[in-house]
Image 1: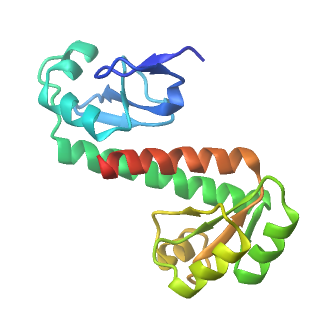
Image 2 (image 1 turned 180 degrees about the vertical axis):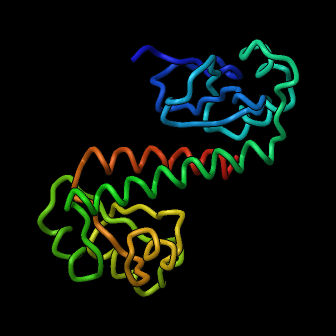
Image 3 (image 1 turned 90 degrees about the horizontal axis):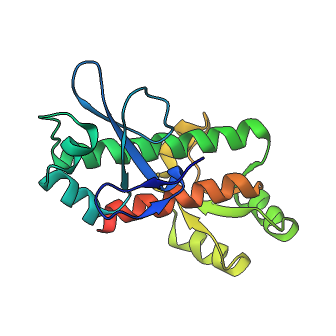
Length: 187
């Protein structure tokens, strides 16, 4: 896949480090990650500075060759956050279907000892006690932007806060999306 360029900072890279904007048939600006929508697209970094500059300038109009294609920063951020959230949910569901997802303290503890490539993940509202126990087992873990209830709903289970994914490609993809989510949250 050819490199893409952020229309704000001019950073070049693989398409998966940007989100894409296109004009829908109704004339609205639509954001996407998976690059499936037809039409001329413009790419932007998952960075608050780029998003803020994009909204406050006419760069989007120029890139899409369309007048009045402005979008409000709150609306854009909300759309991009929702895209990232749905993408993360999809990867969690894929890990379950693929059979590389382990849930709960005992299962995660076993996987940490046995797996070379997998990684533990926790909900954003995991208890302090559980977090301390996890830190004893593993130095490297990642906090998901989901509550225990949201994780349970996503995977059709009871609420839970600790999981392990034993697939290096899924772990890398999830970590990329988590980094992007932090980029638009922290500014």
